[in-house]
Length: 389
Ligand code: SF4
Image 1 (cartoon, rainbow, N blue to C red):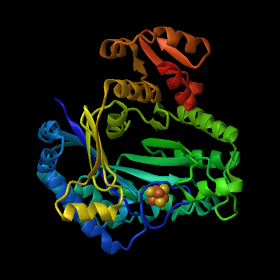
Image 2: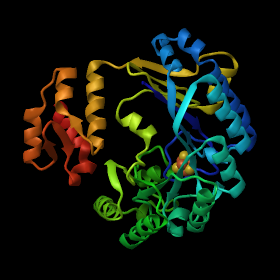
Image 3: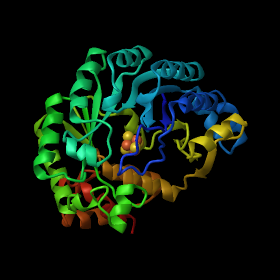
Image 4: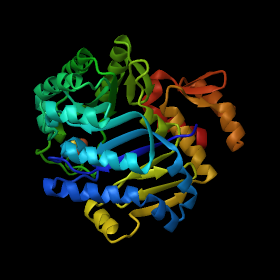
């Protein structure tokens, strides 16, 4: 039976990390409850909202079972657990939950035994844990609130509360990171044996304070101590090697899991399956249309409170755009792209281009499946450009 996923955005943090370019804010905790009430309102009014916009074809989604829920941010683990529980009840009361995976993003320093027990009792069964590094000078330079000790404290608390699916995030390319410190973060992660690990390459752009310092100069955010591109590539390749040796399967460019623990929710994004997003800046995809909510949390809450739709853009996905998404997302996954299906669905034969790329060692073809070769996983954009040329 068809299902869909729900994403909820909680755009609040305790501080702003130096490398962060997300639409998140550091606000008083007094703002949390009114924001969550607005998201509850958006959920309760979804049917009417979709009628008022060119989204009426989406209404049928609301009658399908919801099998994944992902509460991300920001730092949703800052919310009072009772507020979170009431919120989960709103989702239960307005949809048809058949939840297989309910993820909460949590920062290590926010995790306490009572909170974790409350989360588990509310139905949360997966924690995506912003560990980022096990080296305090790196965490401090990046403006993170937690230290390595918080990670070691948090994991047994979560396990003790009955949460058996934990995902760790690590960042390759933090200021002050070295080969030795990266090896340390990797080995400490593996030693704690999470079910899932995401490794993100540091992205530098003018949307973060660190990015601005790289462009404009200055000593404040340690931009001068960023690892080189070559070092980051080596970090990534070392992670591929170490995680494989520890029994993790890489299923996406940035994601590894123990068998059976690939993220069901995130796979929906990569497989172009349907999901609805609620909250400021949340994105949705119905299979035919994509839409996004207003990014600014205050403007979002005002729109909801005055009965206006919170969407700021709605677009139909053309066949050309759908093909581009298929290839881009397919290349990110180790499952690869089914060339015959692409040919049937989009009327495009990629075999000749694939042969040329395979001759250059960038991709591998096995029967009708196209995959990036393992050492080309970080140059997927180059391959995409060649396939669409
Ligand atoms: S915790 Fe995450 S969302 Fe919040 S500021 Fe840091 S990187 Fe950005």
